[in-house]
Amino acid sequence: MSVASFELCASAMLGGGPYFRVRLSSAATADIVVTSLRSHLNSQVMYARNMAQSAKKIVKQALLLPDKERAEVIAELLDSLPPSDPAESRSDEEWIAEVERRARAALAGSTGLSWEQARMEIAERLERK
Figure 1 (spheres, helix red, strand yellow):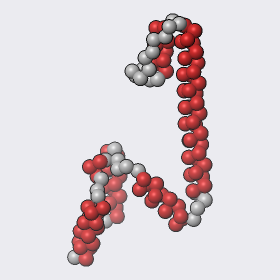
Figure 2 (cartoon, one colour):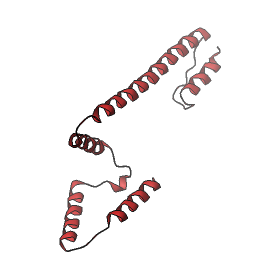
Figure 3 (cartoon, one colour):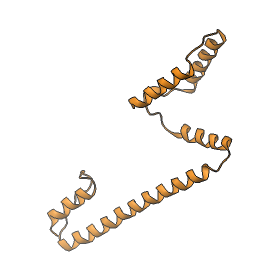
């Protein structure tokens, strides 16, 4: 393997990006590095597969929980995710103000949205993403 072909091979193995450009002194050294790189990439693939299996195992176990505990797990997981749209991110103070606004509207007799209208709006927002 020539030095030039190793450079192209390493770049292709890493998605063609500029992250891995090395000029080596000999083809033998290039072979050693390619073998090491392949081993590293294989271990990364195995790690990803194991993580996917772990996630499936966790989901399977979570589904055995009583409804209330499953809801708590779901709430914790959802709370740990960043907002999908940073513009929708609100501080605790903003959420408190929103809850108070909605409570005042409900106490004043505002009917708000029907469940069907709310579901349609949610579905539309999800379709846009």
